[in-house]
Length: 167
Picture 1 (cartoon, one colour):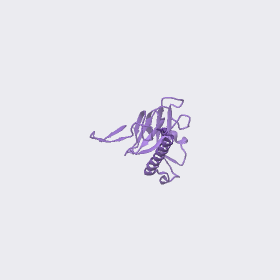
Picture 2: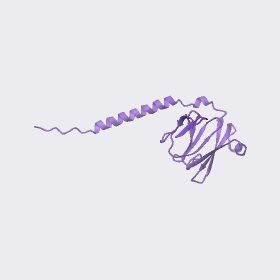
Picture 3: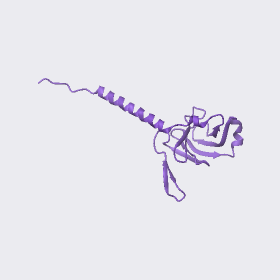
Picture 4: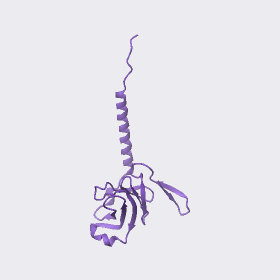
């Protein structure tokens, strides 16, 4: 759990918590906050970097198994840099407006540091990719309800009735 406090030291809110879903943590190891208040959390258990909006809402998850080009391997640290952009400019697609670089330190594997560029593709409309979290939650609830109904149906079908006896 990430606990958020105001400048006077008063508790404001929490972000995430223990678990296996996106937005939760199993082994958080690194944390960084950018100039816009976006919070970056490296989770070594799931080999991901989770980004949260300042209000605590999950923004995105990057990384994954090391077998992928963008994969992470026991990420343990996060560092943000604007000053290093020029050194990496030739690796960034021309249509991508990189605001800064995100360096992730990996404890395992060949790639000890993975570099991501944070920004936006000038050719895309961000509104086309917004996720309606209410729809996601409703779909998850419907799926869970369907699974429970199937489990109840299977349990009822597998019940054996007691054998009747003749007096």
